[in-house]
Image (cartoon, rainbow, N blue to C red; front, side, top):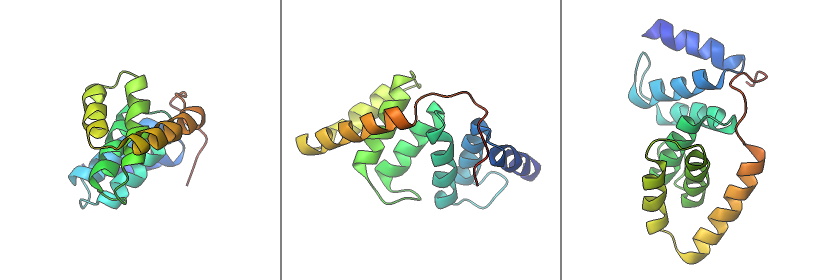
Length: 132
């Protein structure tokens, strides 16, 4: 498994968003690396910003529970809404869970953040320019 992590890191560093998402999963679950929520959230963020729906879903959970990032319900909503837009499995259910704990003013602010992220992080092809 360690070799897989090394290959994911190489691919993520040249811009393959699915590799960044898989790296996030490895760090989340401790697969081939020491479990580290901060690293998981970092790699999910990279992939999510490149339109990876699975990473957007995972990043929403990180923000909802405060795993590896400061708990932020507005961020959780924005990321899960982007995943919902791409028909990510069970994203609608997660969005409903998040909405259930938000006040009307938080919902308004979260929807504004989502609109900003929608323009900035729309779905893109899987191969992107490197980012380190």
